[in-house]
Amino acid sequence: MARLTVLCGVLLLSAAIAPAQQDLTLQVQLHYTGSGTVDATHKIFVALWDSADFGSAPPTDVKSATSKNGVVTFSNVKKTPTYMSAAYDPTGHWDGASGPPPAGSSLGMYSKAPPKPDPIDIAPGKIAKVTITFDDAVKVR
Image (cartoon, rainbow, N blue to C red):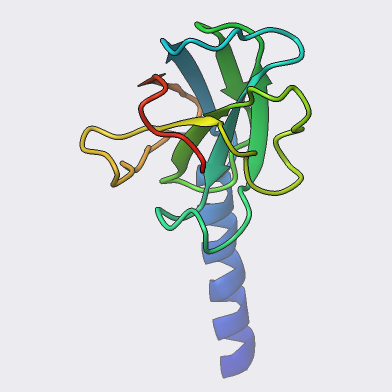
């Protein structure tokens, strides 16, 4: 009986927590001021991460923009806080998901004090809005 009580408590707690982690939406405004041409072939890819340690696991989601001042929206974000990076593909051959950005890619992140990324908290039922501004100062070698 004690195990059943504990199990019911865990299930109720899980049910209470699960809705709080649903309906998480993040809108990202991009401002790429670098010299590269951004278009349908040469995109800016925005990646969401569960951790500030971008190399510890693959991104949880990746979206692309086809203009220097594009907007991407992530619906159904799985975890908050989340972290975000951006990479401009100058080659036109990277898909944003098949490994790291190619050499020459310009990099950016959501951060007030780079190179440390800032967490993005998302309230359930609300749209969190953030901006990433980056240029060609930091590139993949």
